[in-house]
Image (cartoon, rainbow, N blue to C red; front, top):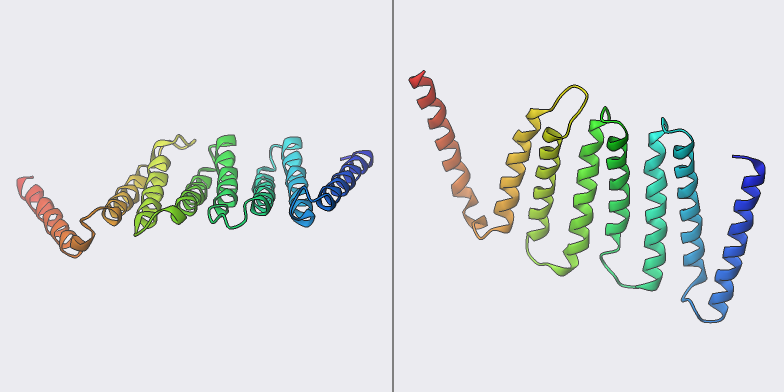
Length: 209
């Protein structure tokens, strides 16, 4: 980035900061400093995104770029909506999106699907947790992890597909189902029965072969 471009950025930041403090003195915004910090984090995130745009090989810059922009949005919304417990979901979703973009850019980065799915799932749980009761959040988290591994088995990678991912996907989805279903008190009885049925299936299959 040229020095002239940096001067434009610093000049723009000073103008925005001055405008924010002026709005604060006019009682039009609650706190100028929250918006200033949000502006600084947002611009910092844009710098990382510009670095990625200039060189697509530097995919790692998407993580701090979208993370800082999400943090900027979080700070500004927290100033405008004090007491909103769901705002943390914005930060988690922003970082999760960066990992999905890393995979979308190059399918060799299949590993990015796992943190991407986990973070987006955590964002959903954080967003709905203030409005639900019981173990629904835990069930949704397990569902999200299961869907993440399921997608890992379905999405194309350069070496084919990773079918092993369906095993943890099924297990996690089943756990999620029990956490949000009325059958939760009976889990201590159900999983031993499931083991007995599975063992019997393998024995019968072996005897028939």
